[in-house]
Length: 385
Image 1 (cartoon, one colour):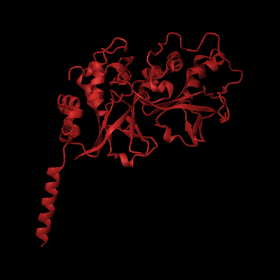
Image 2: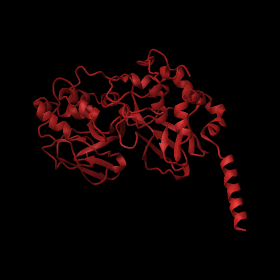
Image 3: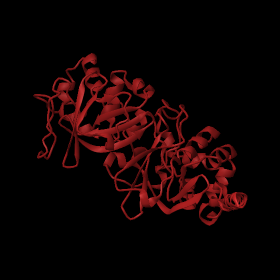
Image 4: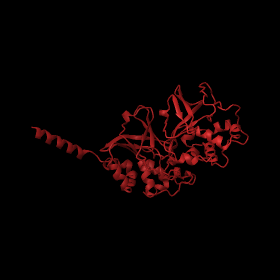
């Protein structure tokens, strides 16, 4: 009797294994929607094999419209759209960024953002422990949005096609791989921040760091204290900028709770959450969770003052009050922006809005590399599939 039960269980298990779909089978069953992706995957067998053998993963599969939109986006109005980014390593990194660690079903995804590690762990492209993150969130009705670099988003058009190693979402766009600190700040129109970091030779520290959180003042914030910043020595300015950086801690918006974080200059930042708004000292967080190659950037509406750490939020204020006594705008325009290239494309990170256009895809660019070409390299990279 025991032998018969054992044999029956073995037969059931074998039958289930035979009926379970592999990743390639599951994607092939949707070939009318995913034929372009399937072709690309067949040209990258090493990636396909590694993910095909993976367990407990969620694969985000761009549909034909998404890939074809990138393919057709070679017009001259898109800066660097013809950039020759076509190495196997680049393609592999981009594909791995579409593989989330863990199996996530739409019915279990809530309306609070989650930041999920991906299979993109190659340190040539990212310096985030456990793999570069993708943010996802649901509207509560199984409509799932995935958010990547510069807060560009893609939406699931088909939820949870299951295979032996996990589940698949068909999505209407291509995720944008987070870029280095200079490109990310520049394309988020945080050009004063870019210039200030360059003026103090701190850019490389943020490009080399691991698990970094940056609270980046917007250009208006820098302009509001222009007269103060103009009188700072390089060491003083370095100390101010260091008060905006947290090393070794990935503090996404969901991690920002009432309490303190130790800044790179050794002083504490006071985090307050009041009426669903987040404050750093007295500065309001205006754009959260801009992913970059080494961590995350949050935009704030003030330049923080390391000599005024007790500055408290004013929730009733309609505009930011500088944390520096006697502060006013300077006479030479927005500080530190001379010589810094102004972005020609408006990304969601620069407007605090969502959405992604066909040209909004970012292909992988090696950590520390300079240039916005990667934001438009997708068309060139995929041109031969």
